[in-house]
Image 1: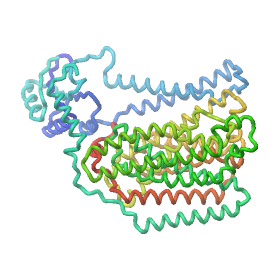
Image 2 (image 1 turned 45 degrees about the horizontal axis):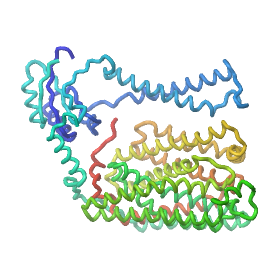
Image 3 (image 1 turned 120 degrees about the vertical axis):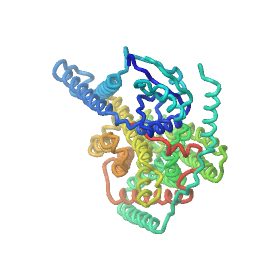
Image 4 (image 1 turned 90 degrees about the vertical axis):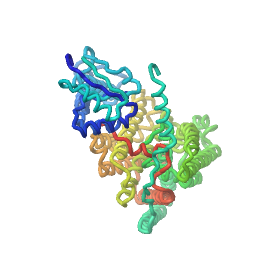
Length: 171
Length: 417
């Protein structure tokens, strides 16, 4: 984001925000990013975002975790180090269930969190430019990238799209 | 509130006010109200009569097996009452959670819950056949353990509890329905607030009675055995079945041309419920089984030994049908949004939980698996009555609570992708 310039406009209501996005889209202005304090229903549809592929990563990692969890226990307790626990058979499936379950949840969660951080370019060390501190409180913000010297024009467009306030940012 | 301007606070307060008092959410569109027509009525009458005929044949051929007859009365009486209670819980928990989405389908569980007074009649009927089901009720020959429990498990106190449960639940459910109908005719927010108070009272009482009623009616069949999470296990099973029934009724009503307002998002949420609570049911099943299997104490394992040896097929089928089937079918997002997939899963889950209740009751009463005309007949009979009561009550009210403060929200949301 170095050396770029952005124009931001904020809204106080998620409904106004969605209306504002629609108004901008009608004028075919490209929206760089939208920042909200909570997930806004219908926003991904309005922004025409593709469906996330994260669930697939989660499923695959979860299935792998379950296999590893079960397989490892089965191998340890029948091949590597058979132990007699209260006269139970070495391959006693019910006692493997908790570990299998926990490991599949752990693997799925790791895949989801780190997959998300990787794909969205967030996480530790990521450039974190704060355009408006109120975005984490009660403001909904639209970001437009300035190309050339159209900053003033974009600010006017945002204002006509119902933004409560607009700002120019040089990064 | 750090750095929050006065203006934004005022704006937020206005938004809240608008939401609560429903000022800009008046719907003038008329929703097609449901008509319980002759065709549906005659189909349901045919089902009830068929069920009654089969039951009579079953009873006549099993007159020397009174255990089996009364076990079936308990099984179907309890199963459908529990479904109606699960439906009441569904509405109430959403009212308390300030949910908006459910208002589009709220009238369906509401009408289902009104079966509780009638289902209670079956449970009171069970009191007549108590001696054929509960061996602790033979007060003249009790062993030491049952004598120790006799302060709680005795016929008089048991009958009092049964009647109290039924009256308590019926009273609260009917009051809830009255408030819900009253809010249809007025813009007054008072009705909604009263509904919330009533729900809070219901949920506290239900937390206790759902557990104790499951101990009384089901767990006390194996009177020597006990499990501390048995109440939740039975409750979650019935809650999943009520979700399944809500979906089945949504399907039937949609095919009949009603409920045009119910969209994919509502189906998705119902599907999530069916999916999630099937997993929760399996979680409780494993929790109960695993601890008993691990500690391996004879007085506890006797419950499972009987079920695994004499009811082996049913025992394993139970887990596969009620956990694996909904888990695998509904895992993908797409199948939660398709009515046909939901219907198939709901029917599987309904049959599965009937089987689960069967497995909870029958080993203790008749001791070996028996399935025939009697079981089918009684199930069809009570199912027919349940559906009849549902449709009759559903026809008595508008299909949606249009004056519910969160009614508009129910159409103003969608599931994050």
